[in-house]
Image (cartoon, rainbow, N blue to C red; front, side, top):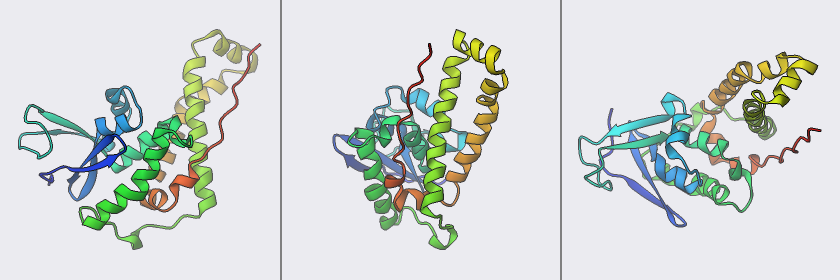
Length: 218
């Protein structure tokens, strides 16, 4: 695995975002991304990523920009960074720090990485996507993620028991593994050849999703 020997640093407001090229692909220092997104537990955020979205770099050789006392560095891929953004609810709230970060990274950081030559992508290999289907796909992912989260919270409570008894156990069941598999398929599609087109060319305006109404249980 070919690793760049020097970190590149981008400044976002009061945060420094360090990047590293591995096999000509941009990787981001995980703790920097989590700090910018106001994620309080970087280790938990990283643990929930797919294996190909995270990487622990053992610093057997010195990397400029990293203290000598640091033995390893947790990194997230470009795809992993997108996943963290998608899972951050505040990232679609206008004016929030994560929202500003998302717009900044798609408008400035990624184009700068490509311009300097540390990362290149053959545009002819990216299949264009229509805006409206893409918008619906991203909105669907957000709502599915909320449904999965709700199921996790509701199932062990008396509300979950009542749902199973009065409406059938298949509802909460389908919001478990079947829903997770569906989300994985959507995520894989988003992270395929179209992912860079999505975020670099207008993803900021497509990720605005309506706030789900809170259910009232009587």
